Length: 189
Image (cartoon, rainbow, N blue to C red; front, side, top):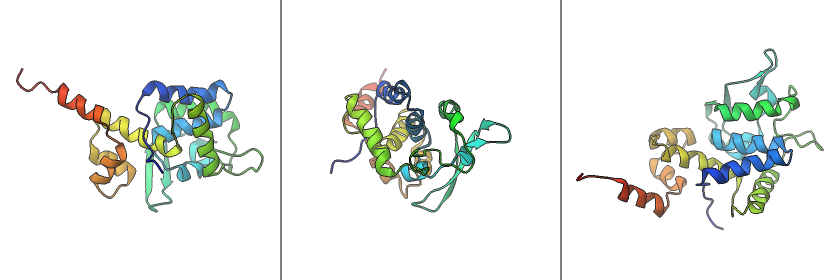
């Protein structure tokens, strides 16, 4: 099985998110936007409820959320990027207390990890993006954080990785990324 890679092109990432809006699939749009902006594992994303995301008393989306990761058991606070808040605001008409954020309308329960994978994979294939999975979206967060100059140690903490070596492998640094570093430094100018 091939390793999952991040999406390295912002235009492709935007096309993937917009694809679902164009199809009127706001839930799936929110899945992509939250996945790339929170770096949560798909299982943690799918466990989110409207109560986690929305303040029903004030009738507005939360600016941050608390999540206990299933894999590590660690609680973490995740600030929601304005793009994530906007996506949730588009979806807020579906907000129901005690209900799953990513609800399957037929069952009333959260969609499965397999269904989330199928949704993302099918859209990426239709857009000619190649192999993209929910895990690709999680990796995309770290890739762009790293490209944006964020410290690896902070990215490692966000991912809850045990070492910087794991985080470096996770980011999928490609040869063209390395080449840009070699060619971009002006040391004797």
